[in-house]
Length: 113
Length: 115
Image (cartoon, rainbow over all chains, first blue to last red; front, side):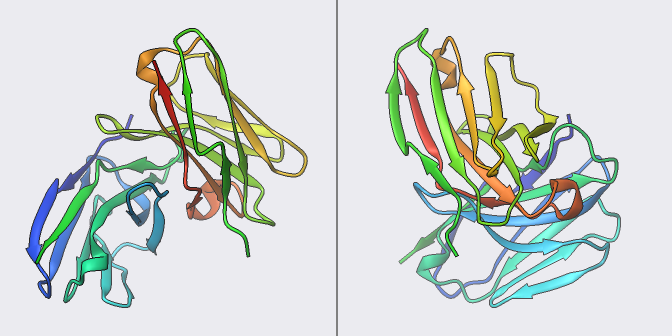
């Protein structure tokens, strides 16, 4: 199946810092999604991207669909304690396929007091 | 608007038993997908149902099965449970077949522990 490499695996930051994480794929995707998962909860959709080069914001979050269609980035500005959680990227290839969305392994965001 | 509802939230089973998990999608959503989440493997796609038909299936053994009812509610079943089946099982709904938008809305999951 398709593989998504998400990095970094974890981030330890100070409150107020900006955060950047990314996902890369060996395959071309035509949809990129970013989710956040809090402990004991299901993932919540943050941002959806459908077009190469697209840059979309949701409050302090900004995500971009890479121009090569093989990568995507998520930035969080001025982090706050409630940003703590696991962030997942997910992609869907243009050929569709029997494996639904492919998810990255997640980036654990930890905010140090 | 109610979100995706999964039951039960937690359950403990022993090896060899079978389990049925239930999912009620967001009202108006006709597609339901199931994912298995484990610390080692992350989120892995099980299957997707749309209009009571299985549209896509992931690489899981035949012990994993599912179905969808006419009201879009879905169930998944795992037979002959193994220790490695311990995981968080997530259900996600979307308006149409995932292929159209890819936007999935997840439930809180059913955490299965196999002893």
